[in-house]
Image 1 (cartoon, rainbow, N blue to C red):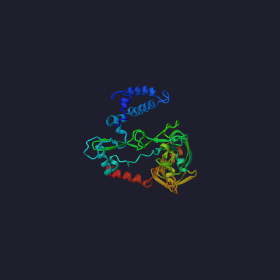
Image 2 (image 1 turned 90 degrees about the horizontal axis):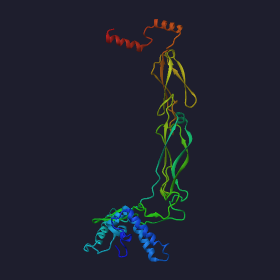
Image 3 (image 1 turned 180 degrees about the vertical axis):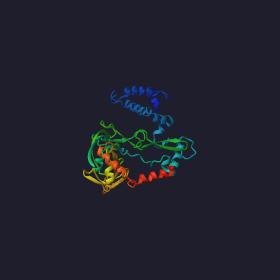
Image 4 (image 1 turned 60 degrees about the vertical axis):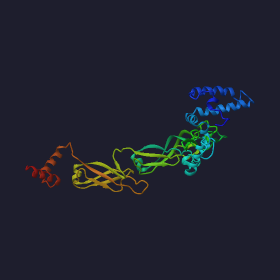
Length: 380
């Protein structure tokens, strides 16, 4: 410690084990006593006022205070060079700093070198927005507007974080280096400066609107284009529409995650649409056709072959969902559900009775085969 540098505890007239409240109270008392406004033209009072500020800035911060308690004023000087004899034979405090310099020369910044890179202002965070769409909207695509609350660049300071007309100054703790060094045994360990976060500079007068962050939260309306063919899990990226970067750094991106609502008629698997349609037992037996609406507003006519059974699936080519960012459409798969009538007129019953009397078993080969297996298995 230099002869002109007083101990910080002595400067504030407190003991080394004083708590934070005691240190703060002592500082306020001395600051009022030596404030330049109360002592105009008094250079000695001004010097004491500055010394009180310097002492308080260190002792009020637990990390700085711990470093000061361990290394004294050398904790806040470049390289922590405390003077002393050269070489390895002096035995003084400065010998360890010299050894640290040797390691630094050989191994570089891993042992506290001056070439350590300073962290840059962070890019804005990416944001997520979940959007629900109907199957029809997923089929046709749509343009829509969303409103989100997002951090945007402060208009007052243009994202700098500083009050207009002011700027940044070198950090008093690391003297613009972005890091502070401490001796541990024979080594010099370099750590990011706790005051400036490793940037080497601090804002002289923070902007009142963004409090020095360079960004503020506010609502933003955005136009979103949903392309035809989107599905649940589809992700749409809006570049640069995420959170604003820190103090002018680039913004993040906004990702729209699509969720397609269930449909009352169709189920979807990729580009394939599936549905289940009821067919009367006469149509199933004699054949016919049914009309199924298409999502594009048209109608698909599905031919029902003679003798179709429940569970049979028919495929309609090109009647499914559009291919996302491609051409063409998938298929529609129609599953047949044969309905058995529950209410018959007298005439209908008579006709069915006549049909039953003339049955030979060949009309329903699957049924005939099943009962034949039963007979073989049980001897009925």
